[in-house]
Image 1: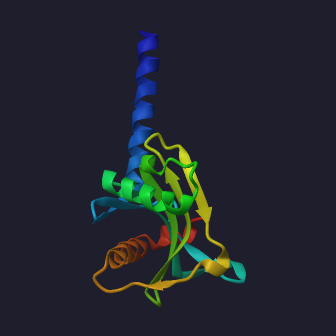
Image 2: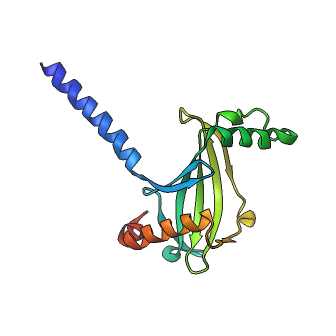
Length: 168
């Protein structure tokens, strides 16, 4: 009886932790069949450029997850295998990508800081961090998917302002 109770507790813990992990990814939408989410555990205000103690509420940093369709995986493989870019990486097995992004609320711009590609077993296949000189904020055009991402992130930040301020 004691073993059953312990087993039940262990199963309950494992199931609840996987559910909690799923809850942290908020759905944004679909684009060309791919599904996009942002991570509520990593979203935060950035710090002023030369002052790591003062937050800049105009810059919101977050992780964007892109779950790829089969066609997107094939397109990625075709593009990345062209000219033998990273030929040792099995691009056709990429199930999802995590991109670190920033939004500048005041200027309505967005930037990519890094990208990581994972297979369906969550094994990291590829990771790239953009050089600071290469990170450029790009204007978010009206009625584009980036516009949809921008509005989701800004609305979430406004609603959860205290949480973003206290994020370390």
